[in-house]
Image 1: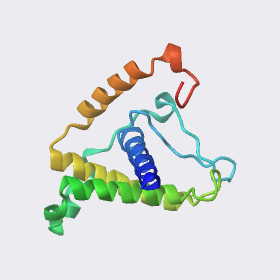
Image 2: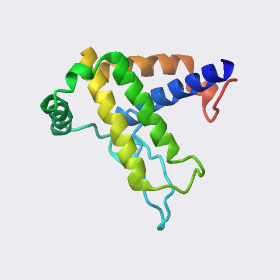
Image 3: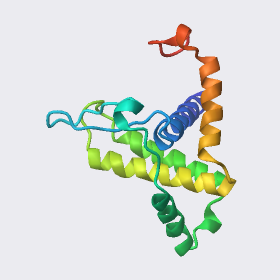
Image 4: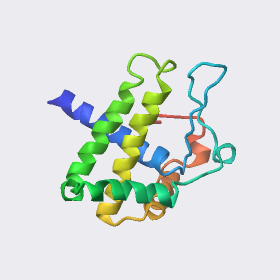
Length: 155
């Protein structure tokens, strides 16, 4: 049982990271190909341009579910499960190597996570900027730069 709780905690943390860092582009993450190798590089918002998802992309996500009448299955619980499942499929891309992975597969799994996150926002009537800015304010208070710069984990 303890092992299950540890795995569940890890999955929850990973999903929060994906949900906040990648989907909302508050910490823009763009993967580049470097010298023909598939090595991911996280860029700053200044280098990446700080883009957000375009309205036509959001409309296409919404239309996809509506046309198939899948909204009836998009309960918050089902969407949370789907986000977790897809985040684990993304993690599987890096199962045996941190530096060698199939970028196309990473992009597909990341897109699945993003789509389900948008579905969750819609279902709960949440404003992405509002919830991310609220969470970032909490993170900034919890991890002040002067105490946490260049450090990870518990101190």
